[in-house]
Amino acid sequence: MLDKELQKILAPVVTALGYELIGVMRIQQRGHDVLLRVYIDHPEGINLDDCKQVSYQVSGVLDVTDPIQSHYTLEVSSPGLDRPLFTLEHFNQFVNHKVKVSMTQPVEARRNFTGILQRVQNHNVIVKVDETEYSLPYEQIASAHIMPD
Image (cartoon, rainbow, N blue to C red; front, side, top):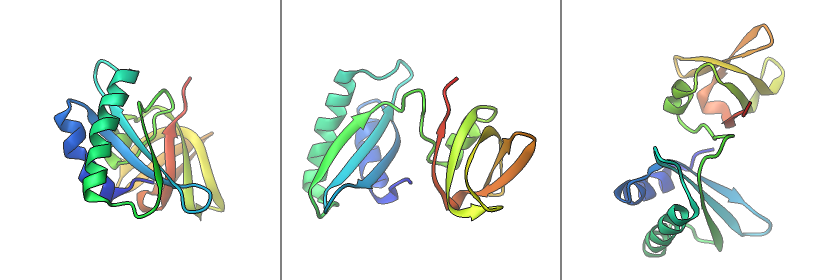
């Protein structure tokens, strides 16, 4: 899910440029290659020039701090309509939206839940699937995103 170490390194850079850092994902590709995906947002939206500007600055910081030991590809993008949810604050922000949540461990014999985000309660994300509410431990969420209408 969220790469917290890289989030700490990159948040000040992205914020200084006037954007919100939504999240950072480190995705293992074939072999030893890594895809580093950085999601940014702005109240007026994100365009290609925004992504280029952030990519240039983030690239420089990564070159200096060198937190990734293998070859990587940097990708900067907007969160899009199927916005990923990384933090409990993100889940709180999108209550009453349709979400898809994948778990690292099964909850009631399931790993995937698509339903309406009800609330966040005691570090659990409550999702209503059909007529059943599931309490999903935040620490066990592998990925989550908004399902566009």
